[in-house]
Length: 183
Image (cartoon, rainbow, N blue to C red):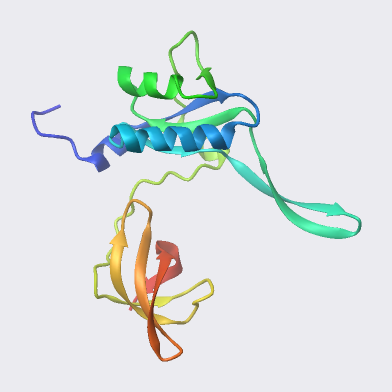
């Protein structure tokens, strides 16, 4: 490493996914607790993402079909992070966490193949060719085929705020990057 400060995007590329064991049924609480502690303690440059892999399924009861969601790995949460003493301590001592998966207290990162098999999308920031005031077309969702003007771009959340003309008024809506295309 050089003396220059490493950017968050560069650190995100170095981060690896780790599996954290939790009390069964506490996965979403653990996810929320880790995210809150990351925000409160300014650890956004060490812990990048927390995921609870889920799948949707159709449940049939009494002849009615309902779309439901279930956890793929009850009792486990995935964390994308750079392991150092502080980040390890923060995750390990989160309420509901029983430890990292790995020998002893040393977490073992998942391989890229394992991460893909788990269905976790890596949210490395895409290189997008959008800027404020660009005109876009909405290609999916409830605002499909609407035209709009970009008001702001949030690269971390992969969202844009767009003014669309609805009922003769300009209305600000938030859309995902994959819902729009640049004109």
